[in-house]
Image (cartoon, rainbow, N blue to C red):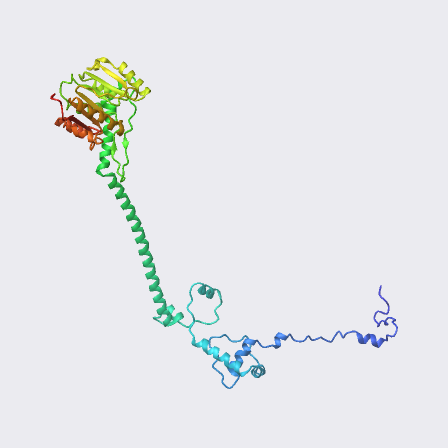
Length: 420
């Protein structure tokens, strides 16, 4: 529902001290357009273009414009250039111009490494000059001096690389040569004559134990303990082979071949009989009697047990005795005798027994034969001056030299008392 006086102007509201004219004057004119002041950026001139325009046109000494710089996005008004020329000091203009000339005179640096990557990423602002025919890119970017320096650096790097390669190859060759020399030394050490001799004697001892002495071991009630045969280290680092008994049966047979054929008048004495194996081997010959010494109760019991259990069919000598040397002492037979000195006999006992033998020979001279297992200990002793070494028969001497793991020596007394 419209007011009937809607087409006419409505009377103003009733406010105190306000008239109609005051109300109409306060309303804005709908026809009038309000103009906004221009933005300060539209009236301002770009600073870079303004400085370039001043350097190029302003001042009495205007230099040639940049040929490689891009033009300003919009022409700069003349009045702005004039105002900028008046504002910028002349000294500043000269310094900018000098910087421009210096930039034009200096060549562009060569792009390497990260510089090239950054140059590729950044947008180009200056066009690179065309590369002349026959010149490399290094000359264009780095100049002639930089090209020579780059060539020298390349030569130095190549020389360093070659030197490092030669050094590594030399070190590898030296290491390989040292390893080869070590292998050759080990091989030559293994091929030494004394090493081969030690191996050979070890094999011989095994053959005698498991082949030739197998029969006698079966006849023993208490077996012979495994001998402590091996390598003995002496002063100077030498390691000769040392056989630790018992004497092989074949070797004892070759040693007794130097004795007279008929041993009926002879006595056999083993000064350390052990389990009696050597004593029972000697009992196979026709000795008048055979005696074995033990130096403790246990050894004496073992010796007596083996003598009692041994088959008499293998014994030519039926009088076989076991004596206690620590309790009853040692007696030298007063008849022709064969005295056996095993390797287990200590040097002190050897010297004492030889003293008794020498004293017995002075009182009652008679033929006495000494048999030494692992000979060499007796040499140089004063008591041995009354004995001479007796050579074995030629064939048995060769057998002993080639197939005996122990050195055997046989001696004969010089004064036989007129008995041959």
